[in-house]
Image 1: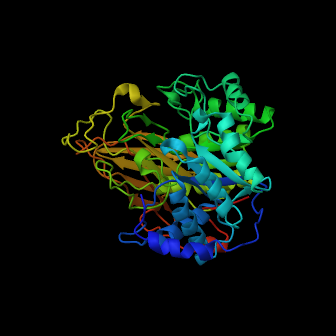
Image 2: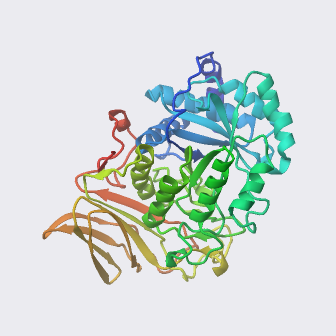
Image 3: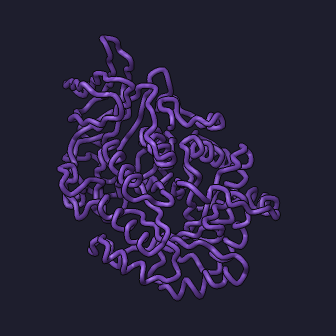
Length: 484
């Protein structure tokens, strides 16, 4: 998919690739990146450069270090990489980084991988780990260790461009092989060329422990599987890049899978495991903008919807709440909440709803029950960030739910009903916050298990008014907590 600004970008390429002194900034300390896949605008009619600048602004505000850019070919890297270099330089984001995640699913050639690294690795925006540019992949393990060594790594070494190689190589059968120490060690020992591993996720594995009722329908625990991979890599002296997946809905895939992560509840579990158990060198959020699998956390209200049957639903609640966990991971200390806020996460129609338009929605029917993973119920998940105890009131349909909540971060769940829910926060008889959420319908036009999420902060921002800006230059990533 080539943007219409291809010609402009190629003209800028020569200027952007002028010799520059490579840096090793951001090599040490916890790093967080987001997996970038598909350009999604922030406003209707936005040009490509503006979208890229807004992506960089939003990433810097989130507190992450940049993007793992998923490219399917060398031709795409010649578009994407100069675009982000130009965007970052234009807004003064000197510390913004990116690196190549070579997507091997469509045959990214070894020659193009080598050329991409040789062309861009000296740019200050390209991430270097252990003094060398980082190279990652989506897949490619079936090519074998010798292929990677002979066709990519050795040629790069010979040209004076050695890389730190941390691909996504998985178990031989990710749907059957248990993600335990023995099987992960088998993968690690099969690839002498790797410096470490990244894992996009573990299929059919919600972010709950096996003894937690919230795990629901599952094959494995995501937390146990990721901790096992981290342990196996560290025993071998290898780099571990952890993943965080907000949730998963394969809207137009033949598998038609959905994984319930319960909004802020699953987010807390995942990051607590990353911070207290996995101790990765890096975290990669999966994804920034993959609307086709609904995992995006880009704070746009205009997700790209050129594929029939993928409605636009904003995910700003994921984006804003993630700021807290990114700050916690980077500092090693939980942030202090300084303003009250509410974050909501829910589907937009009941589990057993019958869609009235069978021709839309990728011409697919309802999700098979066997492909609903986790504890899938018709419930809304609300996370409250409180400076002191308060009462949360949620009205949905004809029902009202009141909860007395403690200070700190707390996630609750309540049944949802058709209609537009409202949220209120009360303390000492005073209404501190009140807003209306997203519509829930009883009979949807198409089947859609996409989660809608949003937020509101007392005397602060909300998901209806958020826009990309340069507020990140002040050093503050959020107005509702203070990093420690």
